[in-house]
Image (tube, rainbow, N blue to C red; front, top):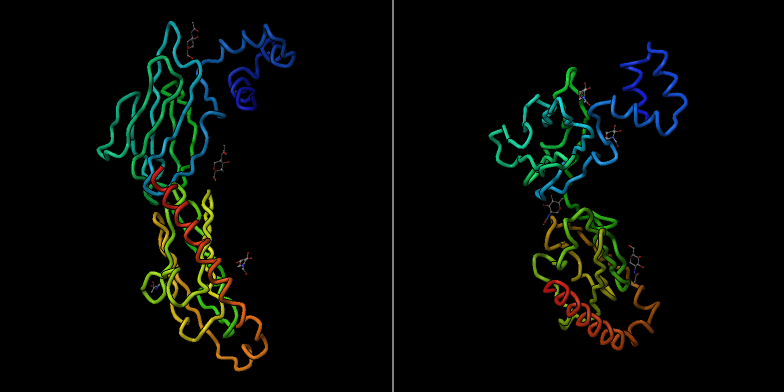
Length: 282
Ligand SMILES: *[C@@H]1O[C@H](CO)[C@@H](O)[C@H](O)[C@H]1NC(C)=O
Ligand SMILES: *[C@@H]1O[C@H](CO)[C@@H](O)[C@H](O)[C@H]1NC(C)=O
Ligand SMILES: *[C@@H]1O[C@H](CO)[C@@H](O)[C@H](O)[C@H]1NC(C)=O
Ligand SMILES: *[C@@H]1O[C@H](CO)[C@@H](O)[C@H](O)[C@H]1NC(C)=O
């Protein structure tokens, strides 16, 4: 609407009759103004785009009143960075085969498809209509990457006998990761090993989380822990289990009742793994 008024002002501000039409804003004068208006962008359907690294991106440009009985105009896409002409109408001009023009006959949408987007593709793209003077609408493309983080890293200090709680967060992955594996000093952590007291809980979604709990930390639990999501970069932390002499002495009950919890967590891990496997094959 603001754009429309702006366009009218540019063309007709000095024209008293049209200024009056604009200010009354009745339905009949609106349609009169609209046909006189010529081509314009539908900015609500031509928005900025955030794309995932490597996942096909679509930049849309919707142009109203592009063609009429007397005139037919072209819509082009230009990369702003190097003023590189990418597409004209339905034709792709660039030799970079990742770019493609998409347009269905009689549609108002002129779409620029970018396959395998990279960080360097981030920037401004111009949708241009070949009127005189030409019309431009600018669309910002931002290419983002999946990001993996272990909360509290890169180094964690844990008292001997307490619980190691590592939370791995995966953001901006194209899909929730099918699985998130944990490694300790390069070996995959086995939740059913004789160590016991090890459990993991995974929550998958737009942001995914995997929480690794290791009960009653021992010095041998020290070292590098790595979180490995199936479709994002790994992250790691270094855990130092501090040998605080009387921690265990202060909590004898934790020593005695740990065994039951261990059974419980092993069962939970199996349930979780089953759910994860089912999810990844559906
Ligand atoms: C067709 O579009 C051109 C350019 O916008 C405009 O000048 C002309 O008046 C239009 N003609 C009709 C019949 O709508
Ligand atoms: C598009 O992104 C740019 C830069 O972040 C911003 O200045 C502009 O207002 C955005 N446009 C829309 C329509 O959101
Ligand atoms: C582990 O830490 C997370 C925060 O990083 C917290 O939300 C969660 O409750 C903790 N779990 C346990 C069992 O301490
Ligand atoms: C741990 O992560 C850091 C960056 O956070 C990286 O430089 C380092 O190579 C990683 N170490 C291992 C063993 O994966």
